[in-house]
Every structure is written in C-alpha cells, then in structure tokens.
Image (cartoon, rainbow, N blue to C red; front, side):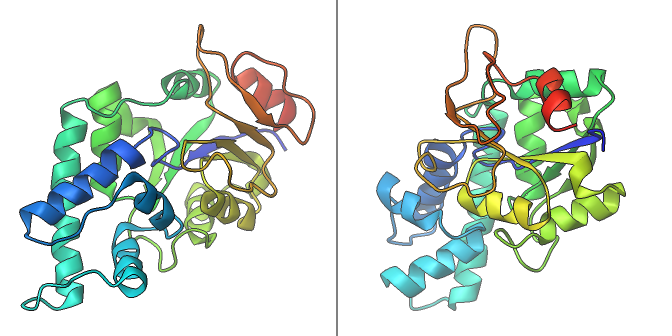
Length: 253
C-alpha cells in the first residue's frame, strides 16, 4: 500500500529534550518544592527505561528509596512535582532553549508538499508538544497534524502499542500505510507492536539500545550540510545524505 502518513514520537525524536530539558526541569521542580532529590545525567538515563514522567518518579521512589517529605502522600507529591516541572519545561520551550533536531522541520515540509498526513504519538504532556512545535515553527504548526495523541490519552504507555493503535484508528489508516519515527527501544516496541514500520533516530541516551524490528536506524534525519550517520539498515537500501520523503515513498510506500 502507498505511504499515507508519518507518525512521530516527541521526546528525543522531534527534539533532544531529555538530558538538558526534562531532566533539568525535574531538578528545578524538586528544588522549588523542597524535595531533596537530584537526577544526574547517568541516573536520568537509567530512569528513561520507564515511560511517562509520573510513572518514572514512582519507579524512582520504589527502586532508589529517596528521602520523602513526611507531610505529603506520595501520589499527591508526584502530581505536584509533575505540574511544577511541566511549567518549568514550558518556560524552557517558550524561550527557545530546546530546538528541533536536524531534519525534522524539513521532513514535515516535504510530507505536506507530497500530501502525506502527519500525526503525533507521545506520552509527554499535550502542552509540551504544543510549546515545542509552536516555539520552533510558529502558532499555525498544530494545524499540520491530523491528530496529536499525547499524555494520558491511553491507559497503558509505551512500550504498549495502544497510543499507535489509537492514532491509526483516529486516522482510519492501516499500519502498513504509515511510518513511525522513534528514538528509543520502548518507542520501537510500541510502534512495531501496532504493526508499524519504524525509523529510529538515536540520542546519546538511546544509541546503544536494541531496536528489534526497526526498518532503519540513523543518528538524525539530516539536513543539507548535516549528513546522517547510518547505524543499521536491515533492508540495505539507504545510501543518502539525509532521509527524504522520496526515499520513504520508494522503500516504505
């Protein structure tokens, strides 16, 4: 079947948000709320094995046993931290501290010119998606997407395939009419679990993860003057300086 839509993860995929974005925002939220926690780059990398910010904090408490405030139930504390962190991260986005990764804006434009639909499938908060995209591409960018499936819109987060299954259902498309873009093993498992072909653009945190079932693994999507590094190519078809819609139509269409 011909290629009809591209479906994108957000954190790590559209922007390298984790190490110098979300991690920093969490640490600032901990400090502002008087919570004696601090996530180093290494510790945050370990915590990324868990998808979802609230789930990640719960995992941290259960497995690393940090000091807990005596005056707040854990569920309330996690909710308060998450709200505070989201506001801090929002300010980081609005002030332009987190740019899109190489090739993202270009592939959006190429897809729209080719009549290929766009969608988002992410566990990050809907507001994070809005501020990241609008701060980099303007207020009208949200209209480019048929559906932005974000946050707690499904019961089970990645690596469950539910978020991708929801997007496919809402767009009335079959999995083999789409390509998913991810950066992590959990994201890859989520997309392949929904039957989608997957292209991975790794980050410093995910570079050494296994991406079983991925159709292509690159270091980035690439732009003129910023060629990609090919990491894995199971099909043996990629010999390009950057990923393009023409390549996708030839090999995934």
